[in-house]
Length: 357
Image (cartoon, rainbow, N blue to C red):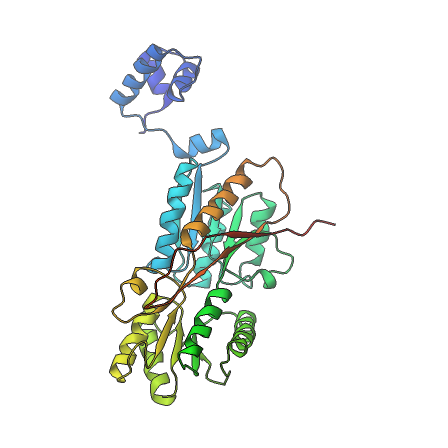
């Protein structure tokens, strides 16, 4: 059986409160007594109970990060910066991967309600199947910062929200490509809720028109999502597009994995990148930076995104009141191949929350 504080008290000839205070470094216990009690605890093999400590303190000093795909380098970058920032604030980090499954995503959010952490950062895919859990977390005063998901579809759900504005960077890239003579743009679109699809199509239509690109029926190419292999998805989509619509000269991939598949498709079809075919990737991870064929990349500033998310969660944990939801927008940066780019100033745009009536 596990060694308890009572066992240590008996072995050390001390009272239970004295041992408890010594192990928790209470200032009223002398350093000599602390050393003696810790020595006895070490000899007996005592290990503090995480559950017991959390119950006593009323917190776990732990944050959770919920991501759709641990293999994706963007989420790996975010987690790296999140853990670093959280540790500086005195919090550990636990990672959950729901593998792009709505069922697993719900289970991850349900776990947050069990008191396993003090708050969570979650890349929520849709509020269609998570709305009730988001409400429950808010009502239980468990901080949740949703990342990326358009809050336009959350209705009256209350939660903190942080996202990256990629539109200015994509606009800059498209205008550059238009000057290079490109004219036929296609975006690879993964399976997502209908309302989000509609928003993406509407926004893209406006952005393409603004940058001089025509919008057609094949400007959006839905991915079949038959496999979790996103590189294979990119390859399959790239081959289909370049064979069926050979005029395609710009393909916008979701991430570096898809971009790798598109590059292989371009190679098989005899297309030169980026001269004959420009490939845009929606992140700036090592896959894009070390690609043999130059890619147009959108740096979503994962370090700044993670830092803002941690600060949000810490502020919530330490706040005496539970005020209105917070909204923050991180600025992205366009990275164009074959051009020297100075590091732009990274900023956060905080959206003023709506006042409760």
